[in-house]
Image 1 (cartoon, rainbow, N blue to C red):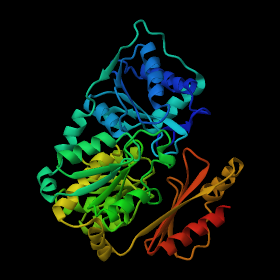
Image 2 (image 1 turned 90 degrees about the vertical axis):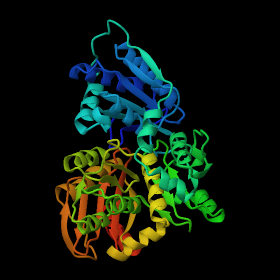
Image 3 (image 1 turned 30 degrees about the vertical axis):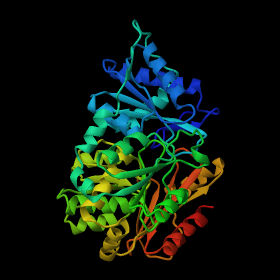
Image 4 (image 1 turned 60 degrees about the vertical axis):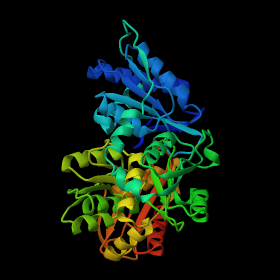
Length: 463
């Protein structure tokens, strides 16, 4: 069964991610294009650095061509944000990125991008799944489509980012950065942006490695030991890490402290609003820090909560003209940029913030915790047998039972999983993974211990 989660279809290579199944997805997209009468525009097809990604991009392109659809192909691996930019910039209807993002090296996948460079909405992915199951074929092409390779795919994307930055402030600051690209496809664009801004940039893990050095290509705290150690021992001003397809970012302070996506979101929203004078609300998904709510309120603005999935974030940003939108998993975008997550722009804007303020990340973060108190988020996964899923779903979603928590419950929401809000501002949420047999549980409270206790209560209840 080919199923699209919030980040596209992902599967283990050789098991479900096979040439046959890649062609099935491509054929379904051809059928959808025919249904919607959108064959007049080409489809851009990109790929990351995984073992099967480049061949899979070729398989996908061959199917599109065989049904008369023109393809804009890449001459090298590219990050997902670039494909989103090209779809938006070239006014295309569809784009494809062959990627499994931050998943383990044995996975690969397909991400579908639609008009304006957005993540495909549920309506599109549901229709693709139905077409795949039905085996519906579009009519044969009278004339095969063309394959055109972009020789310089990065130019417009890089120029767009550089045009949004205060390059002089960054140049004057002389910031020394250690960059860990985690063997991913965002290596070239971020190095180019930072070098153009005259940062001193040293790199680790920039080579192509199908096994990502034996670790998941995710900029999580536990995976950045090498970056942390070198930032501290070699006295860098900043450490930056991005995931395998370049849509998530992690930060290391000169002290070695890891800055999470939640902290990055708060600091960048504060910087854009207070230093750059951008007015407007902020958007977060329901598993992201509530400190954004307090910060927005202090500005006389509103923080909007949406379900997990960046398509919901970008749609809400458009609706309310938000300054910034993001999620605790590590992705964000800013008003006027692409309609999806982009670690390259996020990291570059973070560097600008340090240059303009003259402060370290931890010094900036302390200002926010002094204002709003500590907000500590913890997360954990609960594995389950496939036969247990229905029982857990009924317990939480149908009968809406809750554990006996050590805090007073304010309310519970069920728009995406089960989220429990407590009167002291804490919360715990659990929702099913879209790609693995896992219950993902997040909690935010005044301390790590308090958040861990909320997670333990939810786990014990679901077992």
